[in-house]
Image 1: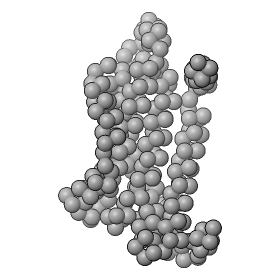
Image 2 (image 1 turned 45 degrees about the horizontal axis):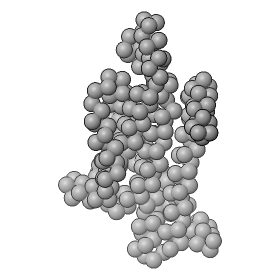
Image 3 (image 1 turned 180 degrees about the vertical axis):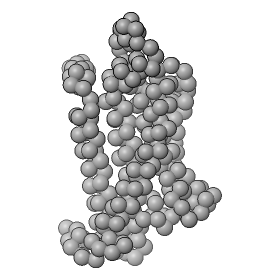
Image 4 (image 1 turned 90 degrees about the vertical axis):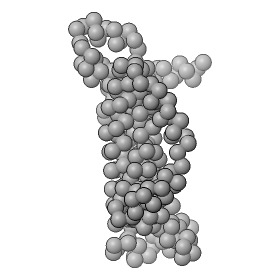
Length: 230
């Protein structure tokens, strides 16, 4: 408790180029950029593979990579290759970390849509792109958002490693605190990272409530309650 008071009660931590607001903004910028780039890659690819049924091996490989990829090792590799003059040695490993959950959940969401619903859409005269955009994506949206949420939380937590390359972010409090044995800074930085991840979690929950249609939400609740009763 004393560490919290020492860290958050110190006015120096709330102003200047190394204060909490600046570090928080840096952390947000790194995380948002990595998640944005991962979304640009993973969502269209997941939609395409899920809708056509072709290339599912890519999803399997991606899921396995998500478990095997050593983010810190990849970070060090890209730092050695690209140097520390830009943010890309940090962004690239974060994108590689964020792509698999988005890709897998997008694919599973599209493939998991009831085939009868898909057939009914074709029977109404809708074409491939219309079926995907007007029928499959709205039904699969909860799983797609789940993938985005999982990736966002992982990225926010892992962006801490940006401090290893000399870049900013909330990880600076943790890394610099360990280096100087300032454990109040280590503890305070860790708390900020956890709170940031919780805010992201709540944010995606609110987005899902706004964007997912009530009919799909009710259907998910019925399915989950049925699975629980079994």
